[in-house]
Each structure stands twice: as structure tokens, then as C-alpha cells.
Length: 412
Image (cartoon, rainbow, N blue to C red; front, side, top):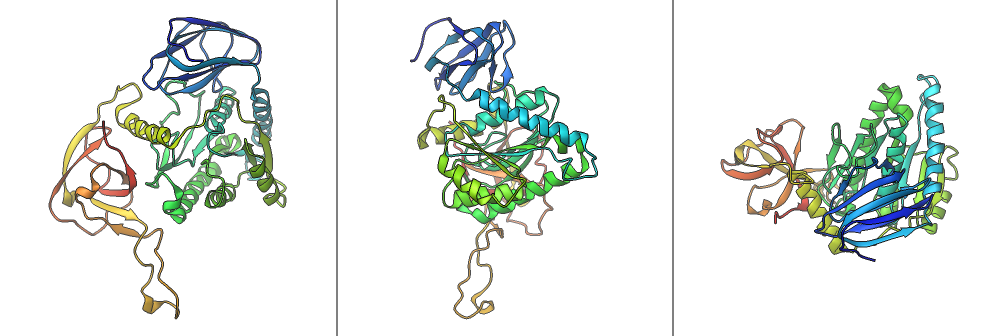
């Protein structure tokens, strides 16, 4: 049911949860009056009102019973006593045991000292992101600093959509502020579907995995803490192929399958020859809500806006003017890989998915998202003209190499 009234009080029995869907333009608050409760694995502070952002779908869960109050407008609001939380926390306990064993082993033994590499898979709207947040928050609460890896380019938990990224989680994730961004590693793919350039997606996944391997080899504590990997909701055809690629590339040793028996069976069969890989089937929460394409598009746009303006409109992006000759814009992928004369008889030239193609700066770039690359400046110089761009902060661009995809954002 929905509620547009004032303060409401809920007395939650042990191992039950209050599920809430906040409206698109609604203000909403929640506070803990007695007992203990948590949201996405992060404990609620007693007595203090917590402001919840619009459009957030969340659950206040209690292990031992609690009384909570809420205030504001919600689209859906109800108490549920059937949740998969006990199975989720059991998974956390097993992962924690593996972390402890990894930390206790010799750091020179690269296999024994490796903590759990967990990849969470399942169809769209099965609760993958929420489970990742819980596992990360529970681990950090016990002193670990696991690495969060987000391969979901459609929504983006760490930064804007169109990117794959990772960041260490050192403390329980704040319900309002979300994933911390002190030390993210970000690769810009530039599209919201891997089908645009699947080979490029694989290349970037591999690059990120290799970067993390170097980090783990030099940091025994981080290696023992391991990683939690969030994936896309596309689990058939090319999506399934990319899931297998991610499992292999990150050397995942725990595969958590949410909400689909078929996917569990396929992954169990394909990994049966790998004795070090455990595939675990978990039920999705009954509070998971299906989101239509229009809602997803709106969420992407709001996520990009949040990048520039902040969650609470507390940031001030800057509009700047720069000469055409001061930057170079490239699109990754396209152009023939080789001329027909260089190919075997009868073979057709194919597009090179990782080739850099220079993009003419024109009105075609209007509203496109461009990423700043830290690669070396190319020799090519574009004609002397100027463009106006919006950046999250003042000052010069940290690099003159920019990358463009198909991701757009029109400020409203």
C-alpha cells in the first residue's frame, strides 16, 4: 500500500523487514526507536532521522526485533516476515571464514592467501546490487576492506552508467550517499549495452582485472579481503557469454546465482571441472521490483545528473570554453581492420572493436558524454575552433584525450 500521511510507526518482529518504495519526487525519512535494524547491511543509528532519496526502494530489516518510524510519501510500504536474509548472512559467514583463513596463511602462497572472489549473477531486477551492498557492508563492519567491482554498464553503482569500475569498501555503505568514491578505478565503455561493442567490453573487463591482480599481489590485506563483483541482468546469449568471460577473467571462486534456476544449472555444469569454484543458488527477495525500460532510462539520466550536481544538489558544475585544437576526441571501435588486398581470398574486412577513430568536433557531439582519458596526447591536432563543455569541477582538463560513445545526457 502507499502512504502520503505523517509519522507512522512499525513494530517489527525478529527477522522481518519493512519494505518501502519512495516516490519519484518525494521526501522520506526513517528512524529507529528501539531494537536494532539495518538497511542494505548498514545499521540504522538509534533515534536519528535518516533522510532517504527519492526513487529508492529499500527494506529496514531487523534480526532481533525493532520499532521504527517513517515520515513522508511512499508508493509502497508494508511489513514482510518472509525474507532470504538468513541465507544471505550465512553466505557472509562462509566468506568471512575464507577471509580469515587467507589472512592466516603465508602471504607468499598466492593461492592460499587469496580471499573470496565473489561474483553475483542473475536476471534483471533480482536484487544483485542490494546483495552486493549487504555483503560489502557486513565485511567492512568486521574490519575487512573488500574490493567492489561493478560490471553493470546499464545502471552503474560506482559512477555513471556506461562504465566498468572498482573501488575499495572500507566501511559500511551509507544509505544516502551510496558507494564511496575516494579511490575508484574507472574504464569508460561509453554505451549502456555490451552488444554495441562486445569485444571492447571484454577488453576493458580484462584491463580492470589485471589492474586488480597487480593490486592484490602487492597488498596481502586486500588480497585476503577479496572482491565482490556485480554484473548485468542480461543472462542469455551474448549476456551469458560475457558472464562466463567475467568469471574466468576475475578468477571468481564463488558464484552467487539470484532468482533463476536455469542460470544456476548452466553455471553449475560449466564450472564442474573447476574444483575451486562454488556455485550457490540464492532466492531473490520478495521486495524486488521489476523496472521497465522507461524507468531504467530515467534512472540513468538521474545518475548522470547526480555525478555533476551531487545527490542533494550540493555540487556546482562549471561550464567552460576550450579550443578545438586543445583536445582530441576519439571513438573506440570502427574502421576496417585491414584492406581487402591484405586478406585471404574471399574474406571480408571486419571492424576492429578496439581501434581508435578520430571524431570530428561538431554539433553531433551535443549532449554526448565524453570521458577524459589519461593516455598520452596523440600527434593529431584538430582545426582551431572552440567547444563549451560541462565539468564536475573548475580548472583545466586533466588530459586532452577524450573518448566518446553513444551515452547521452540532456540537462533538464
